[in-house]
Length: 491
Image (cartoon, helix red, strand yellow):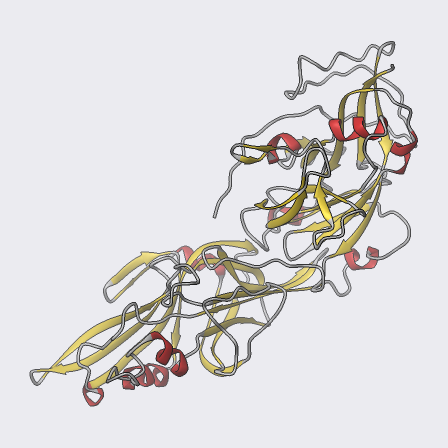
């Protein structure tokens, strides 16, 4: 699923190093939001300054990460072994392919007359995140019957819920080859991962029948007792994860076979498909994605849990990491008229950012200690707005702008609009919260304006899981520090 948001530009960066307030100076850059309302800085009635922040890296972990994945989203398979900042990623894919109707039968239902040519697992390829040149070896296993793999269940992406041991096939390839056109019997297309499975597995499928109510192909329930589904895992090498669309017609199990008809031999192919219908549909297919992150030995993990603020902040898409943002000096400010308040976040450039791309969006929410329900975080009060078309991620600042770092490298810059929230903090009508910066796929949040009229809302932020990671400057970074910029007038 792709979610696009209209671009919006904000005030540019005022790069003055301060402890509490920077020296005031004239605004030389424009802002779209409220351009006619924000007066120019004249050092007499309107001022421009920055407030220091503190940033602390952390990981979600299994206990406090509740990300599930719908069967109609993009699923990932592959392995990243040596991201210098975020370590390793192991993405495993589980899916169920089965006859598209029951009772199903091959062209000649008499098993003695059927002979397997080949059986091929086909996945509809979407894109690659990472190095497309490094080869990977993908193994295909049969999910054990003892595993609780069901169509009407959704599975945490951090939790491996299934066992498998029966190896059905294997393939070594480079992700870049998945764009190539493929021409096979009755199927010419591109953007496929095709893995040939053992002929013994194909012969087993040919041997099943649809007789009565107990044959494997008589109904969905019986077929599941014969075959639970596939588990795919990338082995050892690899520097990328690959995305696939399961409901696509190009995701299927192709069974190529020969049969006898009127004493003549003929060739045919049968397809088992993925049914992306609602989980309540008895014919729906089961699916799960397991994403394991391993940060061992990384500079990111070395910063997690420390008592001092971090000069570099590490943000990784779900399942990933976050940073707690504290602005202690904001609570001590006297009241003033806030024309604009924005949290400025700058990417720290590295050449590998072209391979391990940045998240499409970053998100900022607030930790509310008064919440006693399951959801301990809320949207930033007053500034994150719900509109008839959904939450306004663009105006809030989740979309980045293009910028240049002090060395001339192209970077991404985020500017989160906190104007109304900060004004309420200064008038003492709003508590000062710790904030959380991260790059979620989806999220459930407490939302209410004013706070106290809350409801829990689920919404999408990034288009997919897994893809996207970034380093940004913390509050004490020497050249690209995170900061809260204020444009204000004295009362």
